[in-house]
View (cartoon, rainbow, N blue to C red):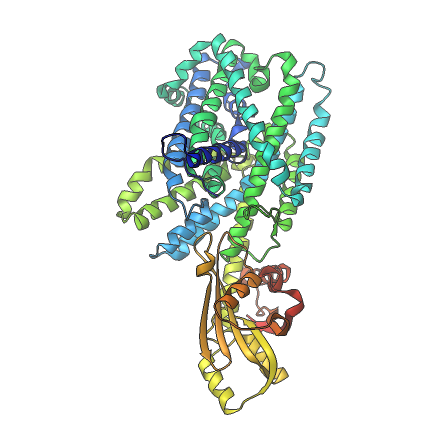
Length: 639
C-alpha cells in the first residue's frame, strides 16, 4: 500500500484532507515497523563505541567522547539520510523495495550477468536473515539489562536478565500465528512515545553540557583516527551499530510508500536519535562513570523503571518488524524460485502483505534463543552484530549501481562513480566489522552462508531436475500420435501442471501410459511468477488453443503474491474457458528423487536438495488447488 501527499488545493476539498489523513496514518505506522530497529540502537550503540576508548581507571577524554558522537551523527546522516532516504528509496519495483525486489527490478531491465545479479541478491537475503536473528536478541537483552541500574536491583537482578529476555522473545514468536494486525495498531503510537522520550532525555543532558554540540562538526570525528590509529577500527565497528536496521527503510517501502517513510525519518526519527546520542555524550562528559549505561542513566531515578518497560516494548516492536520482514523476504525468495515452497498463511483479510511462515518462525525462535543463551549479554552480542548488516548494505549499493546503469541508461563507470562515496564508506565499515569475526561475527556469517547454500542448492537442483524431466516430445507430436491412435476419452476436464506448455508434461504421459485414457478437455496449466510485485487481474490469464480438446492456460502472479489457481480459473472462465469444477481433475506429479551415485561435496549437495524437496509444501497446497480435485501421480526421477 502506498500513499502520496496531495498537492495543496483550495479548501474545503475533501480529497486532499483524506489524503493527508492517510499520509499521517502511514507515517505514524512506519515509526514502529520501519524504524523500530534503528530507533532502539541508542540502547547499546554509544555504550559499545565509547568502551573502546576508556583509559586506566575508566577515564575517557572529552575530545574522544565528542569524536565518537560526531562519527555517529555523520554515519546517520550519510548512510540513512542521504543513501537510503534521499537516493535508494527512488529505486522501487512497482512500489516495492528490498534486496530481492531490487534484484528482480534489475533482472527485468534485461542485460547480461543475470547469474551474478542473482548471486548478489542471494547474498543480501542471506545476510538479512543473519540480522533477523541478532536484532531481537541484542535489542531485548539490552532493554532488560536496564533493570541493573535501578536502585535496589543492582547485583540481584543479574541472574534473571537472560530468563526474562528469553520469556519475552519466546512469547513474541508464539503469537506470530495470530498475526500482527491486532497489536500492530499500537506499534506506531508506542514508538512515537519512545522517540519523544529519548529526545527529551537527550535534550535535558545537552543543556547540562552544551559543549557536546561540537560533535556536529565532522572534523571532530575524523580526529579520532589521528589520535587512535590502532583503536579506531574497533571504534568504527561499534559506531556502525548506529545504523543497524537501516535496510528496513528500503525493504518496507511497499507497506507504507516512499513519502511517509521519508517524512517520518526527516521530521521525527533522525532529530530524536541525534538528540539522544548527543545527550548520552553530554552525560558522559559530565560523568565518565555513566559510560557503563549512559542511556538509562540519563533518566531520573524515578523514571528508570518505566523507561525499562518502555524500552522493552520498543525492542519487541523492533523485533516484530524484523520477523515480519523475514516472512516477507521468504515469500519473495519462494516466488522467485530461490527457496523451496514454504507454508505461507495470510493473517489479514485486508492487507495481503501480512503473512505467517511457520517454518521460518520456529527457525528464527530457535536461533534467537541460542544466541541469547550462548552470548548471555548485549555487550557480547554487539561483537557479533553489524557484519551482516553492512554486508547487506553493500549488496544494495552494488545492485543500485547496476540499476542506474540499466534503468537510467548511464555508462557503468558513471553509475559506479555516483555510488562510490557510499561504497567507500560501507567498505570502511566492513573492514572495521571484520575485526569482529573471531569474537562472534562468525555467527551471522554462518547463518548467511547456510541460507546461501540452501538457495544455491535449490536453484541448482531445480535446473537439473527440469533437465532430467524434460521430454523430447512436443505437444504437436503427441497430438498427431493421438489423432492416429485415439485413446479412450473420459468425461470432464483434466488439468496438468507444466513449466513448458509446448512440451508434454510428465504427468500427462504417465496418465496415458498407465491409465490409457484422456479426458474430453485437457488443459496445460503454467503458473508464472513475473519480476514485478503484483499482477492486475486483467493481465493474469492467457489462454491458447492447442488443437481439438487441448488448451494452454497461463496464470501470472507477482513475487509479492501467493499463487492462487482457484482464483485464476475463475478469471479464465470469464475469458471463455469452459469447464465444470466438479468434473475437473488436477494431475500433479509426486516425485521420488534418486540422486546419482557419487561421492564428494556434489553428492552431499544432491542429498540436501532431496531433503529440501521432500520437506517442501505440496504443489497442490502451495498453488491453492481445490484439494478434493487433485490426483497425484508418483514418479521416480534420477537427476
